[in-house]
Image (cartoon, rainbow over all chains, first blue to last red; front, side, top):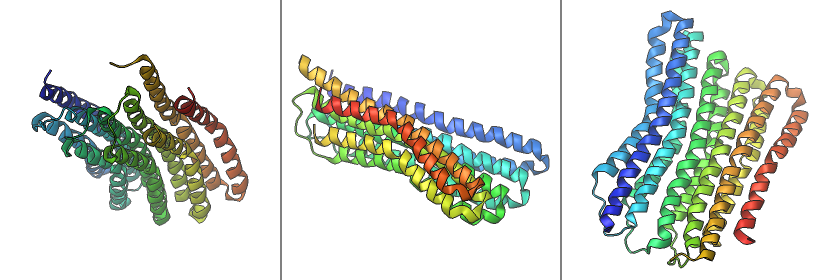
Length: 322
Length: 81
């Protein structure tokens, strides 16, 4: 088959993968928000308009991850990617995998702050604007992994792949997509858990809004680190020069590096989210002890991060030593 | 044409990545959950912070064990097999 046909096959399947996986996350997050919004309205029907407004804003935040996936899918369908190299095909496939998986975690995660804000307004209607602000900040940080994925997807779509030998570059491009895309799942979900706990904490104890917001930002920042490791490995895979591979194993090593860091970021991202969620909830209740709770949160998150570090080490060994 | 030995090596490297990648998921989730509950416990009872932190670390170390097994298998697949 001629090379342009491979590129088209890759573009079509990649578009499907991108929007297919990307749609899952946003839908789940928005559905969760809608469910809890209804519960909140059942507790306090007089606030129905305000709760509904906040639910829609929160759902719009969750939707952004799905929109990124749609943009990548549309580009894959309609842009002519004929660049004279069959390497374009794995690059396009990597882009779709990256954006599809990357949108998954952030979409689901953004459901949590929106849901917590709706419930919070039912509890404390007068705090509505404070809670909306908190929801917007938390959701925005929660979207950062899907933004990392979109950056890597755009690099894979548009940068110059001509002049490189097919092996091992095909594996480097698919691996780069998997590394950021999969790792973003955990960080997106974890960041969302943290933001949800912050919104709920502020609703329950508005006088502690300051320390709660600080620990939300701290917890979310650490929860993003697996996605950053994934991004780092992706950039190394994308931009490192490789001699032409003589054996299949040299190519598979690069693909495996991407899978390793990608999967390896999922668990620690989710785990860091659990840690941040409980820590933030208790900083809200008990802000005199915010210091010791935050320190314990950081220590606990560092330990939970350890397997992501092992995964990064194994990835780097696979890239540089093989 | 892909030779037999090359295919085996390729499979070993793929296995290494999958082993460490998937193996990192469980300890990450479990240790994170443990750390969260430790923060909650300290929130309820800050005077016991030392005891609670130590218990958290011991529990996390046990959870880490399967992650270490995955790391060992991955390194064996890369360097020894």
